[in-house]
Length: 396
Image (cartoon, rainbow, N blue to C red):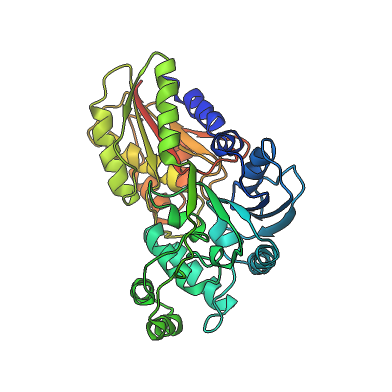
């Protein structure tokens, strides 16, 4: 059997944010640092190892790695906005307003852990309710962020607009390649969408009539003119994750077959496409893919993108594809949604499936229960990465 799990774990190790961020540093960067998101602690430690820091502020979702270097810390919520998220937003604004030149370290998860409403006309209650509906809707993250930016005093470049001196941003990206304005909803990158676009998106989601009406009345762009930082540097993204995996596969004397682009379809479409590609693999080849398929919450069960994709892949492969397929569906941060695991490994497509039971679990958003019956769960300490998901498939 092709050993996919060691490839996955080595990929995570090589893509650690503290390791990659040091490669982007150069002389003369600002010495006041703001780090935001799931990887804020690791990024701050990586910068501090090679760059002098005078003052630092870090806003991190509850439960994620804290920096070991001195910093003013604010712990916010994730994925839902909490009272702590709004307190973190207030303290972030105070830090930015009291310093001139700032180096921003931005990573995914920053949208929820730090926030302030654009007030008037919006309130913290508005933002929390809208965010919860957006997350449950299954719409793409880009559309979610368009709405978020029009309600926020921080997102869509509004944070960078407050910087009195030089602003430099290093981005460790958990979004589609080239869409850095979506990482943490782009606090330092101005967005040119309009409030009417945001209203149309929110109207499709439903249940937010007062906010929709306010957006239609505003008729403004999300970002602030001139707010886009002239210095935006990519640290890593999902392409970094998949290309690193491909290099490791080659080191294992196997042949990497790289998926073109990122998988961002709904989870059922993604599973079907992966099953087709798996059927065409030759022995010794490993398909490498990445991205984030969209999943719509349908119940109160436990699961995540990787566990649901694993289950749906098995259903598709068992319906006519080869059974001698090994597959691994793994998160880059070591935690797949609410599943409690990092990912799922399938050593071989089972010959017999209890489809009724599987469909019942999927209908209740309880994909981890089905995944545990079909394959092996992967449990690791939090990886500290946030580069979307990694998918590996091979003929076993």
